[in-house]
Length: 93
Image (cartoon, rainbow, N blue to C red; front, side, top):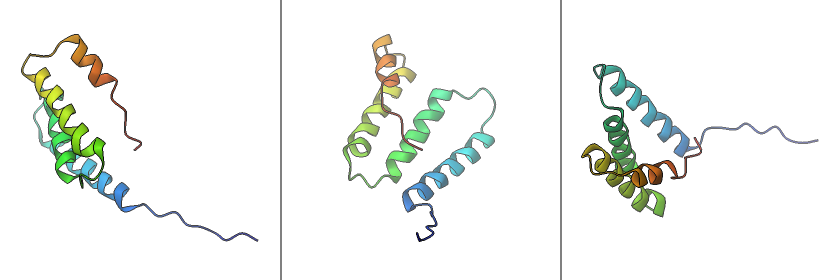
């Protein structure tokens, strides 16, 4: 006879859920017409600041992605930059 196992959310998932709640509150408080790229960059910086920095994707990758988004906002991005942003791995959340 097998045992019943109850799955509980891991601490990492709880932290991500909390970040999403913060973002939802910020989006609701923002006026209509706010730049979505600027909003994404703000959320990316928030995630980077909350990261432990132990793994390369968080420590280095988030900073590089933030630089790419800053290039887009400053009008210095090319189509290759946008393609590079699109090719980035998506999180499993």
